[in-house]
Image 1: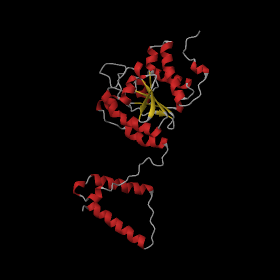
Image 2: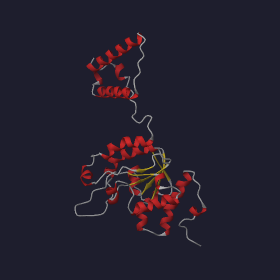
Image 3: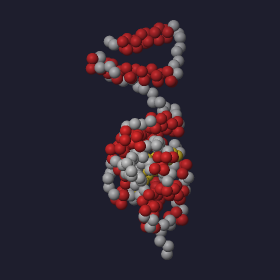
Length: 276
């Protein structure tokens, strides 16, 4: 028997003695959480192969820190660790700041892009450049305000550029996979009714599907049990401003509105259709 087990037995005997004398003890939730965390840490450091079977058969349940917290509080709780991430040393050296995400923690609709660009890296908010302005217009046309939805990226740091080169590069698959657990935490907290992946790279980061957007869009996918719609990135529409391409994105957004059971006006149905 190790020292930790002996200490637990002494605590148990002391509490049992107090109980027999009619003394009622009440521990705060914080105190219980600290005790459970300490016990779990100690057990993890112990070679359970040398312990009795009864010990390994009774894992200690640790209270989740998020219990009883609002979604906003839960997001605030995970934010410091994400902002301090150093998993990708090359991105740490080049970034201005980590771009966490922005919007309504209780959003029923969440947009996911691939990675921050230069503007986002400077301001610390996703989709604030020209593509962000277009995304805001799309959100407004759907009947939402930007503050009604939640917006984040798969990769939280701007991809670094070779020395002397400007612009933005596409994030690598390994970079997105390293960062995906952070996005997954955000999605698990927010639990939107619908996710929208903006661009094929974002879709690849979320699902691993490397298909072209032409094959991905217009039909429903799934991420952790949440309906997922893929559509073209707003930057694509800035490069391809034909009505037919805009209509493709809008048809995807009409499917999203239908999935969310939102009313769709005739005006909305006719957006970007050829005028007779």
